[in-house]
Image 1 (spheres, protein in one colour):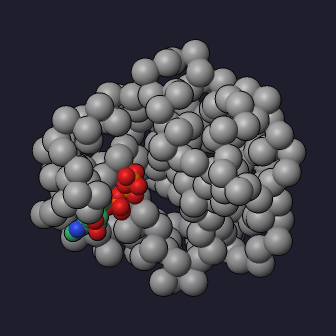
Image 2: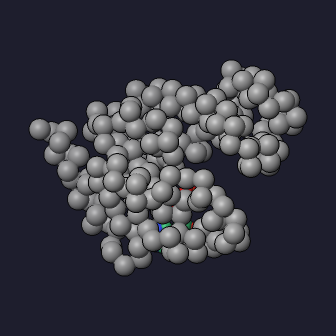
Length: 196
Ligand code: ATP
């Protein structure tokens, strides 16, 4: 079974594209959602987070995300520590999930795929590319946030051009190119690859 990653910067449209693959019947693992769930439910992960950041990050067993974000936002060392705890747990959870799937190929959607080292566990990676201005306006609209807040989040991620160069396939989601034909072309390539 082929293991495929989908990545791209904030607002590039990777979740939207992943949903199209899901409509085609391909199982999709959404790494951000899974990480959020694990931080609330995985006992070992919770213990590690409490050891690193203090028990006040949980309230009645539920992660207080704004408290944790506040602790790591302008602290690269603390952010790296958080990633070192959460990424291996999410990678292991995705591995376990993939083993349960029965499909020609499966997809893992993740914003930080190369940065977290998750690409090492994948056979192919699809990048979703959209121009910066469009990404900013899409996220401002989706999250009802300011331009400054969106840009601050983007600045913490790997440069988009650099990320796309590392991908095996790139889907252009610029509001002009049709995305469904691009998805179908890649889908068919994977089906062919799996058959041959
Ligand atoms: P994040 O990393 O922040 O989770 P993302 O890369 O997963 O972002 P999406 O949430 O898929 O991006 O897309 C961002 C916003 O842009 C969403 O509101 C989505 O509906 C919209 N969007 C994405 N692609 C398109 C498109 N081709 N046409 C219209 N709207 C789109």
